[in-house]
Every structure is written in C-alpha cells, then in structure tokens.
Amino acid sequence: MKANTLFDNTETAFQLKNDSQLERAYFLFKMISKEPLVRIGTAATKFALNLNLPVEGLIRATVFDHFCGGINEKDCMPVVGHLSDVGVSSVLDYSVEGKEGSEQLDATLNKVLELTEFAETKQAMPFSVFKPTGLGRFELYRKITEKETLTPLEIEEWGSLVERFDKASKAALDTNITLLIDAEETWMQDAADDLCEQMMVKYNKNRAVVYNTLQCYRWDRLDYLKEQHSKAKAAGYKLGFKIVRGAYLEKENERAEEKGYKSPMHKSKEATDECFNSVMHYILENIDDIELFIGTHNEESNYLAMEMMKEMGIAVNDTRVWFGQLYGMSDHITFNLATIEYNVAKYIPFGPVKDVMPYLIRRAEENTSVAGQTSRELSLLKKERKRRKI
Ligand SMILES: Cc1cc2nc3c(=O)[nH]c(=O)nc-3n(C[C@H](O)[C@H](O)[C@H](O)COP(=O)(O)OP(=O)(O)OC[C@H]3O[C@@H](n4cnc5c(N)ncnc54)[C@H](O)[C@@H]3O)c2cc1C
Image (tube, rainbow, N blue to C red):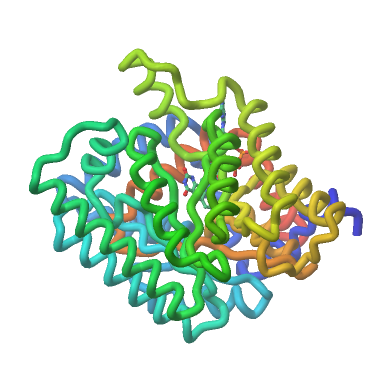
C-alpha cells in the first residue's frame, strides 16, 4: 500500500466502533467543529458544574465517553483489551487537573504508582504518565522558573515534589515501564524540565526510563534538545522525549503580550511544523542516544516519521520509536499504523467527570481551532457511515 493512502482506510480506522458509537463520534465532531457552539457549551458546562446542576449524565453520554476511558482504571480495562487485540498499546492517563493540596498531590502520585504496578502486569500498557502539576503546585514551578526566591516552607514543599518525581521514576525503572512526563505552560516548564533532567541522569543509565516532552511550538526547543544531548553524551545516560506541537498556544501568546515579553511561540503554524520536523529528524538520527514518542494527530508528520525511519534504516517495530494519539481522536492514524506493525499507543484519560473537564475543554477547543484536522476527522466518519450504509 502506498504510504500516503494508508490512513484513508476507514474500515480499519473505525473497526472498534459499533454503529451507534460511530454516530456519536460523527455528531460530536460536527458540534465541536463550530466555534461559537464550543464557546457557549464550555461556558454553560462550567457554570452548571459549579452550581452542581445535574449535567454529569449528559457530559458522560457525549464528550466524556468519547474522549475518556471511564472514571477509574477498571472502567478503562475493556478499552485497553480491545485496543490490545488490534496491536495498539494504552497509556492510562489520570487526567485530574487543578488539585494543589499536598494530600491531593500525594493521592495523584499514589495513582501513578498504582498504575505503574498495574501496567507491569499488562503487556498492553508499557507506559505510565503524569503532568508535572499533577505532582506539585503550579505556583511553585512558576516561582522557580521565573527565578523568584522561595520561602523556607516552599523550599520544603519543593523537596516533597522532587521526592514524588523520584518515586514515580524509580517505580518505572523497577517495573520495566517507561514514564512519560507531559509538558505544560512555559512559565512553569523550566523547573519541570530541570527535574526531568535530574531523573534522566539518575534513572536512564541503560535505557530511557524517563521521557520528558518537547513542545515544538516553542522556538527554543531544538537548541534545548541539542544541549540536552551534549550533556547526556558527556555524562553517559540515555534521553527519552515525547514530541508534540503544544496545547497552550493562545494562552502563551496572550500572556506574553499582556506582560510585554517576547512570545516563546513560533510566529506561524508553518514554523511550528518545521520545528517539529527538525526535532523529529534530529532524534531519529541519534536514536542510539535518544528514544522517541511521536505524539501527533497530523497525518503528514506521521507519514514523514515513517519515511525518515525507512531512510535511516530504523525497523518499523524498533522499540525506541513510538507513535501516539489521544483516545477519541485520529483513529485512522492509530489503527492503520498498527496494522503495519509500528509501535503505537493511545493516551486514555480517566477520572471523575468534573475533574477531567479542563482536559475535555482543551480537546474541544483544539478541535475547533485546528479546523483542518476536524474536517478530516468528519470526512473520514462520513466515508465510514457511507461504507456501512448508515
Ligand atoms: C499522545 C499525545 C500526547 C500529548 N501530550 C502533550 C503534552 O504533554 N503537552 C502539550 O502541550 N500537548 C500535548 N499534546 C497535544 C499537542 O501538543 C497538540 O495540541 C495536539 O496534538 C495538536 O497538534 P497536532 O500535531 O496533533 O496537529 P496539528 O493540527 O498539525 O497542529 C496543531 C498545533 O499546531 C500549533 N499551531 C497552530 N497554529 C499555530 C500558529 N499560528 N503558530 C504557531 N503554532 C501553531 C499548535 O501547537 C496547535 O496545537 C499531546 C498530544 C498527543 C497526541
């Protein structure tokens, strides 16, 4: 099959969806492709949840069940099983956001540790994952990133945060799992990057146990990657990176403008795409030193990765290269890649409905602003409805 038609196979793409799930997906993408609807829907949902209005059922039956595996990890198991049957791995992602008390942060760590242990027993789950702000307070990362002085209490708090990172990394090493650490806003990210680097120095001696994330909408990321590579080579440890374009573009540009500093974002989508390609090329060229997880719904990026691997003689199932998409999005990429034996995984978010709302809102907004991909998603769903004569 020609590589650039691989993702057009909708029968493979939607093999795990029955007719009613296909209809729900179609309806959902149609709704979220309309920007005003998303804006009103998002505001109304936040308002209703804050007032404890009984809207959870409606959210569950629509966006939640489409984009999330369930409320807890057990709910996700049928999905993990179905994905595994067709050669797709799962990354269970406890997507609760905005919890900042130390008890809540410890609870998130415990969830990550539980999931790491749980993953050890399941071949279908070779990764665990967390967001830096899942294990520590945003403001603490920000103060360190912006080089503000910490109070004695905050120094202590930072010590606990480092310990949480360390426990999660050690658990990944002990259970032979790979730990993916997400990236967030630039004004807290330096502190998280430095911590990820410390974990890589400590745990990535023989293989990349810990992966940090590079957001390629940032113009400084290729230089950062090269600097990380020199350090790792000099000190003799492996690097692991998930590469993505980045999820906080509007917020980043708005803050930079408001505070009057140069935006850390590339000026155009094209510049971001070019950066993504260069970062991907650099890592694949240095695959003996740096392992790679390509997190994107962009078809061209996926094709390009396949081409680069071929040109560089990297086997399709080389365990140092993974492809990943989010649950509920770009099934045409995930399942078609799996049929030709690339390593591919779905991020499956889960958690109580109210707590995963920030995640769901980001997905809805992203699908609105990225009009190209949404219309592609819709046209594939249409094609499959036609094929099934729905
Ligand atoms: C498995 C996986 C894990 C992820 N983990 C993270 C994570 O840890 N942190 C994170 O931030 N995001 C993460 N994301 C989300 C990701 O960053 C993107 O928001 C999302 O995937 C859309 O980008 P794309 O490459 O799929 O698609 P595309 O449609 O090709 O790209 C859209 C992206 O391009 C960029 N862009 C759009 N317009 C412009 C412009 N005018 N100027 C500059 N850049 C522009 C933005 O980043 C936008 O999100 C993850 C995504 C996946 C699939």
